[in-house]
Image 1 (cartoon, rainbow, N blue to C red):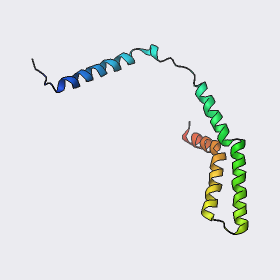
Image 2: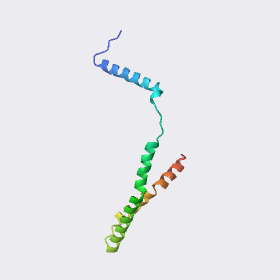
Image 3: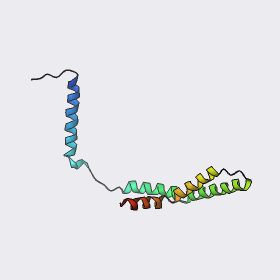
Image 4: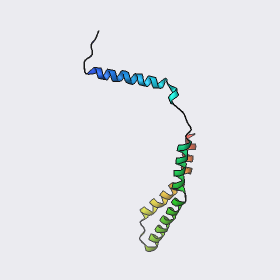
Length: 107
């Protein structure tokens, strides 16, 4: 009979408890309560609607008008202008970009 040192007893006890807990959870599927993701999907759809809706469109129009004013006065920073235009294209083209990536991955 081997005796365990005092330092290894708590570790062994924790390992046994963790193993029993994991086994118990794996064998008890009643706790899954699989439900639809409709509430989460609703929140995410609302958020996408906010990001790509009328508020975002109005902000994009203001940004383009601001770029036009800077261009008119000769103070256009091309790096900032290109960043704004690319950002607007990504925001409003996000759904098409994701669909293209999804179809190319075969999902």
